[in-house]
Amino acid sequence: MSSNLISNAILTIRNVSKSYENGFKALININLQIKRGEIVAILGPNGAGKTTLISIICGIVSKSTGEVLVDGDSIIDKFRITRSKIGIVPQELHVHEFESVWSTLQFTRGLYGKKPNKEYLESILKSLSLWDKKDQKVMTLSGGMKRRVLIAKALSHEPSILFLDEPTAGVDVELRKDMWRIVSELREKGVTIILTTHYIEEAEEIADRIAIMTRGELILIENKDSLMKKLGKKELLLELKKPIKSIPTSLSKHKLEISQDGNQLRYNFNSQSSDKGIANLLDDLKKAKINYKDLHTKQSSLEEIFVELIKESK
Ligand SMILES: Nc1ncnc2c1ncn2[C@@H]1O[C@H](COP(=O)(O)OP(=O)(O)O)[C@@H](O)[C@H]1O
Ligand SMILES: [Mg+2]
Image (cartoon, rainbow, N blue to C red; front, side, top):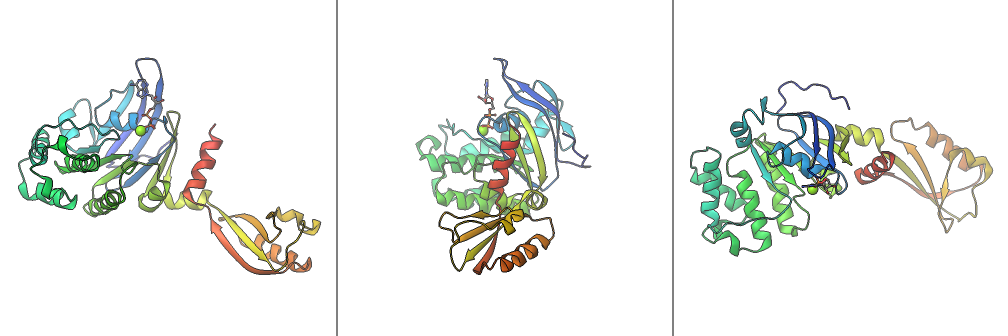
């Protein structure tokens, strides 16, 4: 896939492939550039390679080929400096700390070479409702609280890129709300956020760009709005005054679908095309003496687009 070069990209991934030791090809020639301050959602079914890609960028997994630049520096040649710009909330919950929440955060911050900053760490803990737990040992906390600690750890060194790997899978409603509030606060501060999610609605709401991966390949990366415009189909639903048994042949060119009870007609049109099709349809309905009491349109969701794309790439 070709990608236009973004000057001053915060993240550049060039020809990255990954074969695991057992020979499995988890990533095939990934090319991707991410702008400073962008929110990018990576969608893809289980096993697509999303976690592998994120783990490579964060230096947790080694790549087989290619190059990753963070803020212009190679993650291999300048590991410390590039890693210190990254925060990651991993998909798996593995928290082994015997230490208190507070010392875990201080330690993590120090690990990335940042000077102590009590006020900053206090503000993170407060925004994650962890302040009253700051002296508790991490391992004694509940699963939900441990996940909050993982988020606090990821933010402890004020990263300029934050990776959230399936951040809301299996978390409670409160944490989900807190998470999206924190994401929008970070966006305001200019932090770049890359997230993977199964909740397509969330991607639809929050992301500037959408990337889609399947079976190790990045099949698409596109501005969310233009993706919705390009691939989003619209549907016109007509509620009929009287049910009909079948569609008259005079209407066959419109490729209408009829509901089982005969009370509803469905017409699909491309959101890019002009409205002429609809005008003609309504005209033909009138001629066929089919009256309707109501009509409404429905835009396909990102979820529907996603399902279509995954189907096409098989
Ligand atoms: N250590 C490993 N050894 C071999 N195969 C792996 C390993 N880790 C992940 N995989 C495989 O690589 C593929 C991509 O996994 P992953 O990156 O976790 O996908 P996703 O996060 O999109 O669900 C999967 O088929 C997975 O089974
Ligand atoms: Mg994953």
